[in-house]
Every structure is written in C-alpha cells, then in structure tokens.
Amino acid sequence: MLIIYSIAAGILVLSIMLLTIKYYLPKFANINHKATSEPHVTDLRRSHILAMLFSVCFFAYASYVLLGRELSVINIIKIILVVCILSCIFITDMEYMLIPNICPAILIAGNLIILFFEYIYMRDQIVGLIIDNVIAMLICLILLLMMSKLTHGGIGMGDVKLFSGIGFVCGIRVVCFTLAISFFLCAIISTILLIFRKKNLHDSLPLGPFVWWGYILTVLIF
Image 1 (cartoon, rainbow, N blue to C red):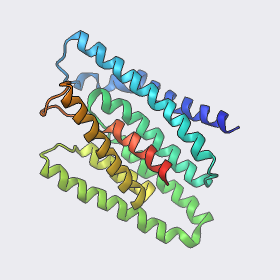
Image 2: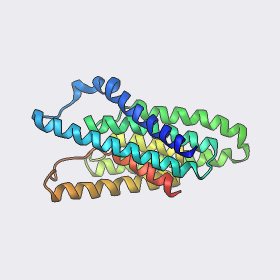
Image 3: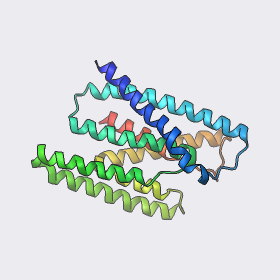
C-alpha cells in the first residue's frame, strides 16, 4: 500500500509540474529576458526535463519513507501544500528565474485554514504553534531582506516571500534547515558549474529548485 501511495505522490508532483509548463509558463513568456541561441535553449530545456523527472522520482521515494513514519494528517497536509507550491515554483524559477507572488500567498492562506483545524483538534498547542509560525516568518523576512540588500539583489524578493511563507507553514526548525540546505546545494552546484565553465561569476542560478530539494531533505531528516 505504501508503494501505491508513493507512486500517487510522484504522479501528483509530476502533474503539477506539467500543468505549470502547459498553462502557467505561457503567462510569463513575454517577460523572458534570456538572450540565447536556439540550440542552447533546447539543451537547457532538456536539462530541465531531466532535473524534473529525477526530482519526481526522488519525491516518490521520499513519500515512501515519510508515509512509513505514520505522520499525523495535519502534518501530511502541510507537506502536500508546501510540495505542491514548490513544484510550481520549481518550474517557473528554473525556466524564467521567477517566483510568482501568488505562491507565497497560497502558502499563508492555506496555513490559516490549517490553523483553524489545529485549533479544533490541538487547542492546547495552538498558541505555541502560532507563535512558532509567526516568528519563523518574521525571521525569514528580516534575515533575507538584509541578505538581499547586502548582495545587491542576489537574493530576490521572490525568495524572501517564499521562505517567509514556508516559515509560516512549517515553523522555525523546518524553515531554517530548508534555508541552510537550499543555499548549500546551490553553492555546490554553482561551484561545479564554475569548475566546468558552464557558468561564470556573473551568472545566477534559480533558487526555486534548490528550495524544493532543501525542503524534501529537511522533512526526511525530521
């Protein structure tokens, strides 16, 4: 049964990514500022497809591990909410270096609904949960705004809003580990690309896919 659920989880993520490619990416086609030749764009999209498929397979495996832990229904809903939003961002940021404002907004709105059910079923813990969520959101907002200023926009406002939304859903511990793992993975890949001269110091990488991986690895760790 776990295998069936894991396959369903992988199909869910793949479906969101494909729907994003088909229906959501065209909305941003006019603001794509990539000045590349056609062969390079084809190679880039091929690498994107490989990254997407590898990530889907990994999430299916991660789901198998997570479902074996007998998580609470509310925690499962939170994971599904964040993964679905990050799966959309995985595509938009990888293709157009863009994180739509609606994605963090959905995270915040979704968690407000979840908090209502937590109030019903976990009333004795609700104050602590709200405080943890709000503090996590404020820490991400303030810290990443400072980093954005220091890096002169190296960290975009989309990233600031995204991590703030994740913090509001998941709390301090999860968002801090997600943040650390995301930047670590980004640094490793950047270094590899620099070594093989696929990128130079003036190029930037989309953070969205690394946040996706950082979150999945974080929930696996915990």
